[in-house]
Image 1: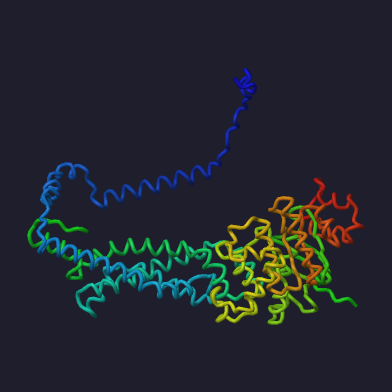
Image 2 (image 1 turned 90 degrees about the vertical axis):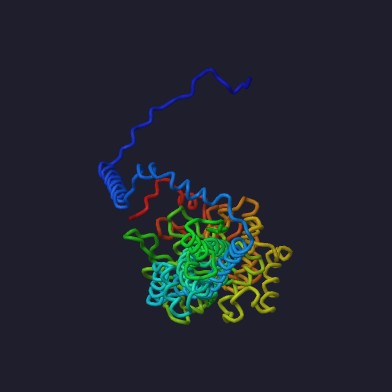
Length: 254
Length: 253
């Protein structure tokens, strides 16, 4: 037995009550009340009804069971499905990569670290917000009128949407960088562009690359929806099948 | 008349009605090391930040080699590149190599087409930077990432960067506060050696009075934003230094 162990109980002190100001309590209560009210309104507004789900469960079972056993005939099901998957992947890949140059420009103009002109800064931020606010499906509809139905319209739509989203993510990553090294180089006489090249970017390149990979992940999935406008992509093949035959066959990505 | 490298006159600064610095004068000759001593909040760091333009003083002037630093002109911008600073937090780019960090000290005199990336740095700059690293004893670590170096080595890389900046004045804001005693001693030795051999005027904020006595030529004590004493290290008494850190010192509002 250790010599350090003694029979004496450790000394205790009463914990003094923590004073909370009535105003803070009231504010907390008000926030909770508002949040509850919003969720109740949302519940009613979306027609949430668990009884309906319980009654109709066999519909789901029938729908899912129709996918079994999957129709694995090579032509037209699996071959077309694989081709559609590939097109989906290509849309996501091009949409992500081709948006990078635009992202860099908007990011540079919309970052306080790079751009000192307040008007240009606000304009760049505005363009990014606009590109984010418009759903990619709407962009696709617009581009279809120019280039017709096809994966190309999907790529163009993704470029627009991804430029807005990634521009925001990148400029936030750049603004989170510790400004100490930049301060040290500013004292040494470095200009804005030099500060970005030698203090900001080296500190945040890993985050920027990580964000690109995350956006690629999201965009490949988004291109499934855009495939609705693109005969040949997996989005279109799964919807046309379920509409025409009334049953879902194996469609690998949907 | 001996030309001072750094001249500071009547610097005053207050934050939100609280005066942190008033009537601050400082002269540092080339090759001289001056230590600024004082308790936390006594205005030492603020004084340095005013000189390099990180903080805008309410009144007063600062100049290097006769050129004004604070009048906001183009000439002041140019003069400012003759002042370098090292920090307690070191502030190197941790993902870059020691050599690239040292090269970055020269950014102020490089056009963008030679400085948009480390790969664009001219060869003679890389060679100059190697020599700077050699001066602080780290030539063999040139291609290592800064993050892989110890705190003392990182601070020596930061000193090499100020050499590569070709600064005539070096301001050090608690350069050794984050280092262990032997690394602190080592960094201070390198810094005073650079001051002597390269004729750099050094003003260093220090929190270790004995370290300041060993390495500095002159001591300047600050209390409540005012200069309490200033003089050659040998002439400043132990009591004068202790009085800076006395517990009952009231910081005037």
